[in-house]
Length: 270
Image (cartoon, rainbow, N blue to C red; front, side, top):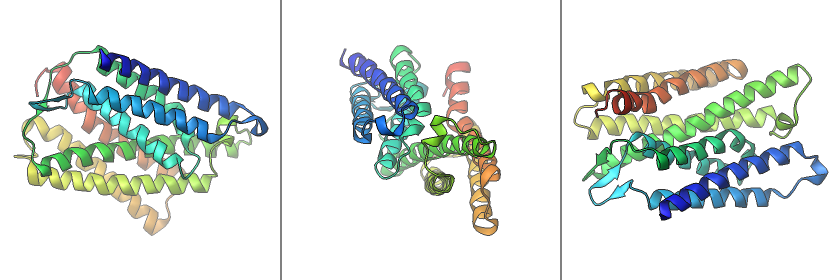
């Protein structure tokens, strides 16, 4: 019962936060409410989300359940938390217009659907570090993907001299681009640690049921590595950076959720 209440409350809080951010963007500068109120609302949503996950079936005496919708909700929580923490130092909470409704949907899917449990029992410290680095890497690179889309649209609007309120409220292009590559660097480093720890602590990272995830993750790692090399060596930016970022994230998304979707929901096996 507590999980149901906190999950619904968290979903509503995220949707309200997204709506408040939207209203803030549509409001003239002189009538804007203090950012602190918006950040407090986001923090409340995240807190309720943490309570929902901590009281859910994800945690049991047998271990941790890493089934599709459980992982989806946990990943959405980490992404939202990263946005909140980043918003404390720079005005990027506008990303929540895209992220928070998706997070609310992830919570409701976890609450309303019953998929087969996939328990991670008696996990070693190395295995736990692999799982944690994987999820946080995905969260950082998901934010980078959203940032890349906004960067592309913002640049397009400025070139056509017709920026909307939403894009006027975003930081300058240079700041957006700098933040994008900070997210990519952090995500790529954690993705590297995830692949290395997987190789060291999984029995066989290239086993049949892991082959899809491993191969797609390595491709994504390579794409982000090339993008970072291009940034350092050739100063890649703008549309080039957007294309490489989205390409890498698509492969990573297929690795993290595409393989789980096929194995758990379509083939119904782990």
